[in-house]
Length: 231
Image (cartoon, rainbow, N blue to C red):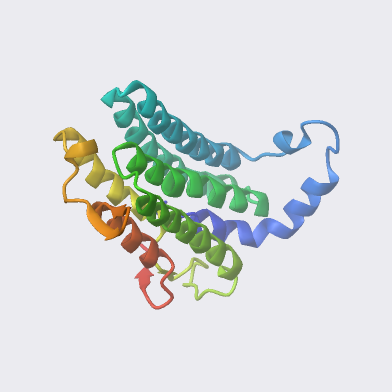
């Protein structure tokens, strides 16, 4: 699944009754976990991959072991796999809820928003202006996911009830940035060897030009006029 949209479409149809039932049933301890559908567990695995990626990037800052960077990058495609599978399982089992839709967005934010930004910081984009750009990128991801959740019910749909197009690029497209960084790391072009010379923007404020690809990616995510046909 390219974005949480696939599972979200199916969940909107059955959400009302399912969520009322979830709210009324099993009020005891751990009732939330007992009410998870199989698809929700798969969605959580997406979030687990995102957290593991962030922690691996953080570990590199201490260990300076390039293997930690590779692990950080590897967890993100695994997150995409779980993001793809959860919608398929939800439709196969006809199990869906608004809870699952929100889980999907939160997991996507970690795996395809926070994790790529943490990786960029780990490999050398660490100036103050770099961190501002990376924060902008994550904020765009938050806005993108929130806009989808708020507007999916009104979005144009095809004959099967699926959304016809995405407004702005889906947040998993950030994996293209991860692929670019993986190429640099593989060729020892990271830390002080990152391509591009540091730009002196203001006195004492530097910017690595490579971080601007994150700014572009974030801007495309929140675009209102850019419409991506849904595969």
